[in-house]
Length: 297
Image 1 (cartoon, helix red, strand yellow):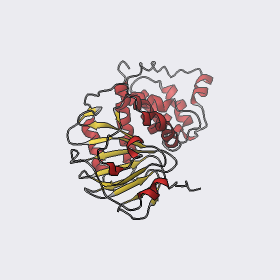
Image 2 (tube, helix red, strand yellow):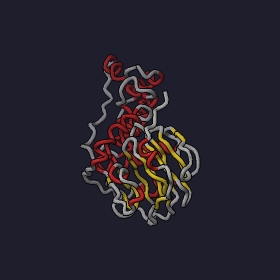
Image 3 (cartoon, helix red, strand yellow):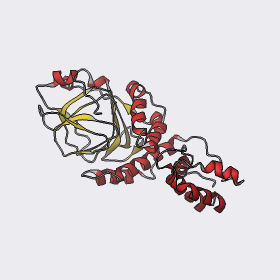
Image 4 (cartoon, helix red, strand yellow):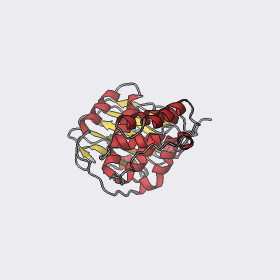
């Protein structure tokens, strides 16, 4: 193995997953098969991973030592931000493949358009990201550790922004309490693809993102939860858990009231991305600003 790809690095991470991680045993065996097929692992080492594939608490490294076998993988290359971004795209696609509902296939088609294109990276600092992304990723890691790790590694090299709203109707809190990054999109995105926008969206705990709409059809894939949602001004809030996608058709009203865990989601705008969002008046914003959602259980 002379040239490491983003796939190789992801498989190496799975191979080295901590013992006891749910699902790690089968994932390790799959990763071992990947390296065996690439000629980087012996058949004897692969057999050890097969033996340990049914129990997450079995440690293949210990069995390798007992049998005097080395997996002989070459050392991983120096960290490359561009491969971290490519890895995040693959992990996001894998995550979306396990969800159902409208907008999923459209979002995955956007991801496919970005594969193999140049990746622009740089060190990105954003106050909201520094303050709230770690807690959001800690919550995500409890159920989706590989996606959480992929975001954690790529995040410092993504183009995070806090949008400067011209409309005061958006309220005093949200403009200073959110951040987003375009992984695939137009100007400023990590990977330039015309006519689309796919990325990550983060909002601080307890913040109200007031009723709004936009011409762009939009997928939210929330990675944390529960949070409060509604889809008409002045309608009651509905608590929705993490990992339940929301598809907004063009000009459909929607509001998010963040719970005690920061709101983190994958988002996709699939068309009409140049048309800005606009606020839809409602009478209960003052009450919702001060509302504190409780986490069930």
